[in-house]
Image (cartoon, rainbow, N blue to C red):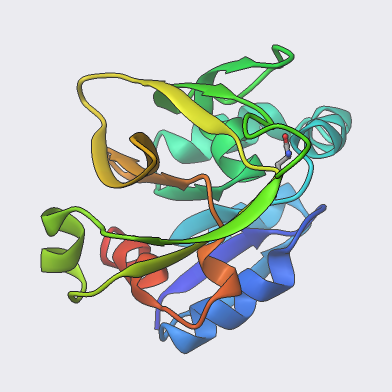
Length: 192
Ligand code: GLN
């Protein structure tokens, strides 16, 4: 069984653990950078990217995560996607730069900051998983304003990319761990 780390410093790591189990993998709740040596891939969950960054700087994790990402797949959801990106705005902040994306934090505004949408995923997503609409839960989500030409868009919402893949990495601006649909986690497991 594949062992997948879930960065468990802050945010909704427990829900990712349950999703991984449903998708047939063994979650490892990573709280110590030494645990990275044990896992085939890593999920960086949603939460608050500024808070996560503080903890990551404090523990000297940033270099270790960047190094891990040069060898193994990482899947970032929401705050995790912000951490994977190369450019962050609103306001600018440090990130791992493992995916060539420009993201704007909290980009849907304060009035309607959370929503559930039913998306038509790209044919490529359905081909690699299973056909059907994708329910997407957005919570104070970022918008991907720029995706480099090497980035594959697997789903969009209102014209903007919300599920993207670049090489071994995957990022979603929504929360696939909050619905019963296992396809996004399955797609990540296929990459390990
Ligand atoms: N708004 C958060 C941030 O900027 C992300 C929200 C989330 O992960 N649900 O980090």
